[in-house]
Amino acid sequence: MTYVIAGPCIDVLDKSCLEECPVDCIYEGDRKMYIHPDECVDCGACEPACPVEAIVEAPVAAGDALLHVADNARFFSEILPDRDTPLGAPGGASGLGRVGADTPLVAGDRVG
Image (cartoon, rainbow, N blue to C red; front, side, top):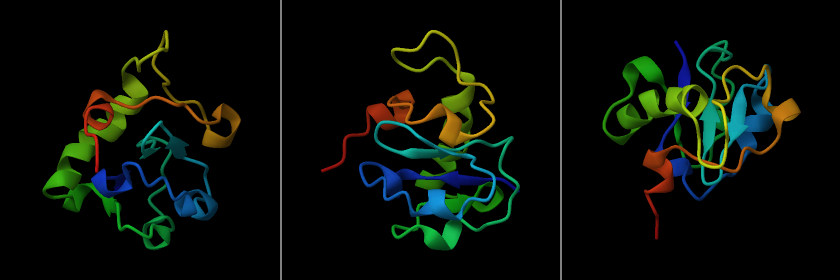
């Protein structure tokens, strides 16, 4: 079971989840955090750390969170704005740093 970060994270980027993730699989976009579906070990440590309850288990996602299941995967598999290639499997967020781009779903979903 992979975890995903859903809409409540947009424009919040609290990053408490980063401190709890033992495998460094949570990446920072421009407006939202993303969990790499192949790097996540399904430990669930990130879920209670999120102050806006944006992290959910992919298999039980519903509503808005369901949209973000596929979108989290797209963040790594598709070419993001101002990039030449997809992120793929970087092998850890800390080595890559802030990506500074989002998927079209998140980039176009202005909050507030």
